[in-house]
Amino acid sequence: MSAQVLDVTDEGVNLDMGGDLILDVPCLGSYRDRKAGDWVVVRPGTSPLVVGRTGDDPGAIDETAIRALAKEVALDEQVVRAFTWGTGAPAGTGWQGPATALYFRKHSSGKVEVYGQVASETDPSPTAPTAPAPKAATITANSSGAWRGGSRDGSRDNPFQGDYTGRGNLRGGWFYGTKIADACAGKTVAKMTVTITRLRGSGANDRRPVHLYLHDYTSPPSGQLSLPTGPEDLLSLSVGATGTASLPASWRSALAGGSMRGLGVYYDGTRDYAAFSGTANIVITFS
Image (cartoon, rainbow, N blue to C red; front, side):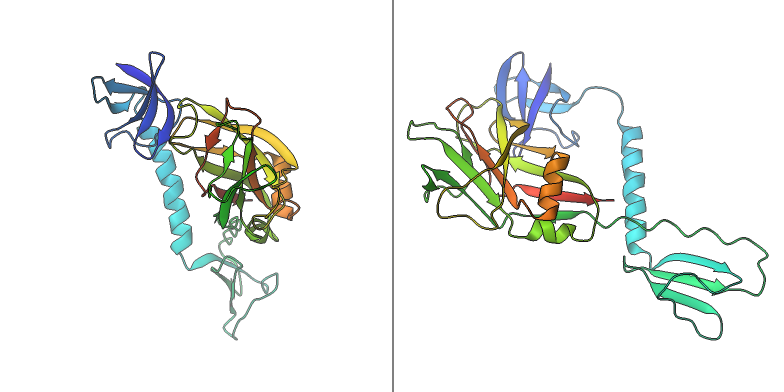
């Protein structure tokens, strides 16, 4: 039978099977690149198993991704970034060259650029390739925690949102020090994504929104965790699920510039009560 993937977990996938939520269904290894929204073929029974994805042959999609990855690896491994020539001395700074009129310099990416000065040009020089964008940076949280009633909840090391027991709403945060702004210094940020995992045993099993905020702390405060910017409901996760979302442009600017330092969660009430892993990696892509 067919079913739709609600979320991907560390043990398999959470499925919508005819309106029923089935948690942590294992998958055959041939079901690769798993993501929410996939329609899959399931062997039903007391222990259901996902045997594969429905739809077209993914070969063409795989080829595009493989070619892009192969190009990235080749650029990483090559020592010489560019080899050009001309009748005059090379333009720009940093060139070194002996009397043989062969010049070379090291690019900011760590690759070598070579320029040969020739007496006459019998064949036009190739155009120097565009300098690659800086490599993406993955920023991991230094710490995380939860707060209730204006102070830190010492019994909870992971971020929580909402109230499940009637004792008051919880809020949580991930703390990165100055690592986000440090990674962005001198670079142009094209994209920021965050990957969050919802923990099992916290609230309803089905999907609940992750109510995200920004904060300006480099480390956990002893008093109330203030969350001045938000919420943005960028993700909705069932228990055990991991999801990735792009941060809004204004949030990217605030984090890259250092006016904001990390992420938090908060919800008023019981419906969206949930707990999250303390990792919440942020991946920054540059242009």
